Image (cartoon, rainbow, N blue to C red):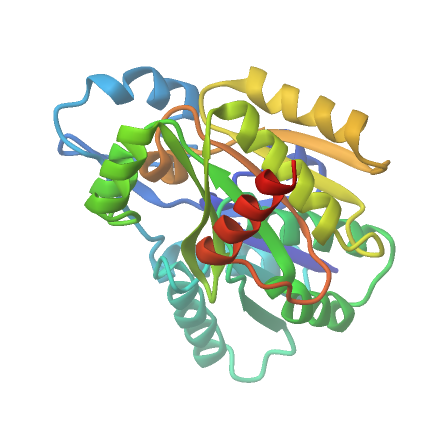
Length: 308
């Protein structure tokens, strides 16, 4: 039996977590001096409802090794022999390191145990690690071995393509995810930055004016990058505006030949703290390692517009 563990930034829906028996180690959120456990003490809609009225910028904290160790011990007690823990990128949080420490504690206290534990540094954020977790659960249900699932994660984690755009740049500035200069230019020109993950950290790869252009960018990049052999589902994420997420789903169905499942899931409090209201994201597996950068994409955009 294989147990799957994640931290709360995976942002998978409660329905998916329950269906596949996935356990979460919650991050903590400090909101004006009060500590909340993500998805336990506070839910996304509650947080987004008060977010703009806060006088202090919320901060987040990683799960402790004890949080992970408690889940591992319970899994063993419940009869699981193999444990797969998939964490957010070590480049953005200490969650992965906490899980590694927990694994060390477990092995130290149980030196003769035959329990297998593998911790994955997903190099992903939000539904990026969520994509790997859901895929792993599907592989487990179809009969894949622990070793096969571990290998899939370690091979394909760098191919999980992230696209994220935001409405309000201030949250990215305060969390250190965007420079003041980039934000100032974006506000003046009403540009929406589009970000992805590069080497485990966030990077801006494009800037588009208006939401319509952002969604068009997502569609065009998906058509060019999607690995049709691996991507059997897409995850669309949002913070506060589900209508935009639904519009993106319709565009994928109408403008691409993708026939797999498309999940729409809300981003949790930990992720929402940094990206703010109006964020929209998209996740799938890309083929190979196609270069992706702001300069490259800006030049390509100029060339395409000139051709038009």
